[in-house]
Length: 49
Length: 221
Image (cartoon, rainbow over all chains, first blue to last red):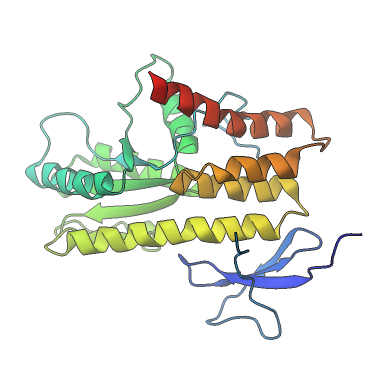
């Protein structure tokens, strides 16, 4: 069984806005309209090679 | 991965993707206004430092419908840069802003470089622009830095959206177009192998994956 990854967020460097992603469903949930990250949503970091 | 052309038909043609490229939108016919010539030359210098290839509507003469050619070229690149000045004809500037609209609609990054005397049309106030002056090199490099950061963002988006292979592959393709990193082909293969996609999706994925072989063959010539 694959590991659950859950919700995450990452910042678009062009817009400066955070994008919330449901990694289990493969779905972009929303883009934050105001400044800063979503509360209680982990920021996704790049996988180490 | 369904794209429409200017006739509102679905594009099913093969797209010759050009990583690390830029679609230049400006006056091409001579004589060029001095300021346009100067901006283009300075832009070329900055792009070549980063090994970014310039393409414009004259890059490929294939005798087909001109608009069709532009749409396919736009799909092949990661970004577009427009150069406008007051000395240019209204008809030329109209074509340029039409092309910016096409690029934006197809998810490509754009920026307008304007001479100091040119006013951006009000509908385009949200379009990013830089004014050509002594700080041009810094300004255009700031834009290009952001674009390359965007490739990392797209990669992260692709990795985060692996549960949705079509979306993930599209992000890998966008990242690849910016930085030309061939690792995205492997990531795409890993995600797509063994998946039962519909014919149109398979065609889009194979079109992207074939870029690696096409560019290798081209570099051998």
